[in-house]
Length: 402
Image 1 (cartoon, helix red, strand yellow):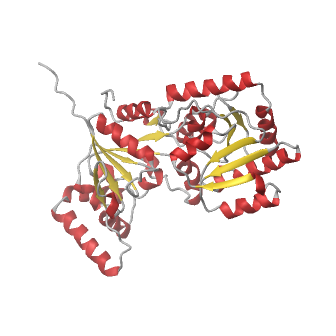
Image 2 (cartoon, one colour):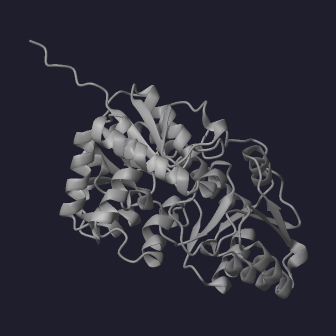
Image 3 (cartoon, one colour):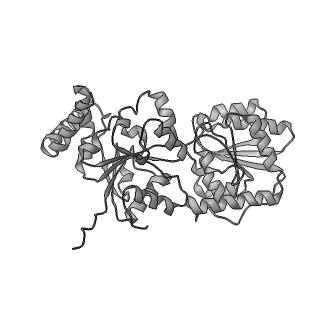
């Protein structure tokens, strides 16, 4: 007698909102799971009108910031559904929350806020960011689903500083964790998470798009680029300080920063004070095609971050053969192999960064080509979308090749 064929699991993914077209990670992940035969349900806190045509089913919570009358109505509907539609799941959530020491008022609020999850049945409930699982530690168990959580650099390293103890309850639960790097895996192990509950799946890029034969010829002015949100963790002020040192040495350069963020005014003023404002271009938000075009004109890509989970932009630069200099912030040291596919430096040392940029700039062309080709080959082999999609399918126990 043939053993019963195992059904392909259904996956619930939890995000704040439906991912936009620019948020390729989640869109590619969902497409990969669907290609493997999985049913995917997206749970979001709220939904916009233009999100209605998303590629999988979307289940949205109620907006409890709509005013007191609407809030009361939404709460009433949630209570009715809890009692008459999915009483068992609601009871299991309240019971487990009580066991964890959650007080009655907070427990009842949890039941109301999270009742929308119970409309669907899934085999896995995967929280796309660590903080999305906070105060929802028992929702998956109430649904009789396996629980998974993805940690990115900001979630794992910075959120606990802003919210001390935020993951204490989560780390006591039976959870499968997805992280971006081996360094992040070691960080979780430091919280007594068993190694068999942690899976490293690195970011990935569209290697068919990020490939080129249009590399620009050497320019008398050194072309430098960074693609990053203008946030303190990106270390851009240290990068500007390094470039000020290069200017004093008489090295001609043009540095383009692609991205927007709350630190722009501060960075513009820093560039002015350092006497390099005319050499810095704040290019703002750019499309992938525009980013690719800029990288094709770039001699050296810089990602001198203070904190970084892994960084897709560095993969994109390497895929195009751009020489990369990065800091040793978390996953960057795994993204770039020092002296093999690029260069890795200690963070917060602008003098060292300036010295390294000058060194790379003056390397013989043969040595530059060697590093460039090694970077292209490694990204093509290890960081394509198909590899990532298959890794996530295996994460959920799907063995079908995509």
